[in-house]
Image (cartoon, rainbow, N blue to C red; front, top):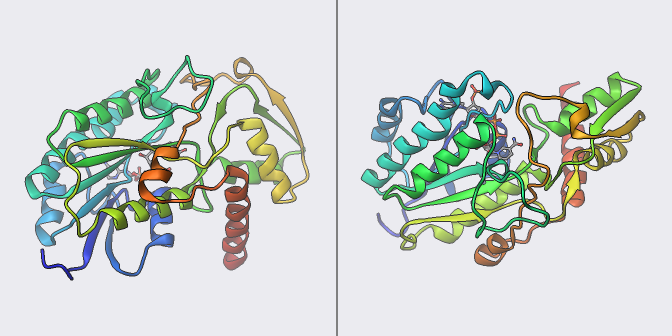
Length: 299
Ligand SMILES: NC(=O)c1ccc[n+]([C@@H]2O[C@H](COP(=O)([O-])OP(=O)(O)OC[C@H]3O[C@@H](n4cnc5c(N)ncnc54)[C@H](OP(=O)(O)O)[C@@H]3O)[C@@H](O)[C@H]2O)c1
């Protein structure tokens, strides 16, 4: 590719939350195609090949995933089709065409046995169909010949799509009393911070010889909290008045068990890509402001 050729990036899962944040933070010098499921259905290798025949891409960011954690217990094959088989297809096609793949994965691949922020040296021990399918996707990529990076992230929220922050804001306005789980610990991460971090990573890699093999990075906002404290902070920052009470995991039964501790340690990402990572509360206050702006615009 000539040195001054534009960097072309394909983002799969173009209708999702992370894709919306990639769009919001997209640098000018990069040409990006956002492909929603209707344009590229990743469960069809042919649909992906057809899109790649049209234009050469230097990078693919795989922001597509089956993300319905509880429903996955009933839809195992659908979850594995997107979270494992599609990643295998992507890896093969990227290897064939010399495209660098950035694949997004989850803190939920870690389940049990952790009590401090988890670094990249730890071995996944997923429980539940969603977590197992995401771990299987990572494995498929690690066993491929692709040049790629797996970026594990956690507890994503933003002003876009459906997420915990928006659910709390809605429920906080609708209900006089909320109960939220206080014995699960993790790293709330503003999806716009993850998006900026991914652009920084691409900026570091473009125009250079890409590292061979598959590397793993953790990306989350710094800090560890519980869903309860996260919810309290959301409501306080948005000045939503409601009564909020902590409960324990067993008081809120769900189809898939969630990890008691899955906070990620993102220092390697910060160090290797020169990206300054914010503490989660600082990022949250920006997300609340962005949410209010967006809601204001809709009125
Ligand atoms: N959200 C979190 O809290 C969280 C936490 C840790 C890691 N992650 C990871 O972060 C990544 C981005 O998550 P997100 O929050 O942006 O999720 P999201 O909002 O659910 O976006 C995922 C997108 O993938 C699309 N998709 C599903 N099946 C597809 C297929 N066969 N072909 C093409 N696209 C398909 C979905 O389309 P439809 O809407 O049409 O299904 C959706 O637009 C995922 O890898 C997820 O596992 C998320």
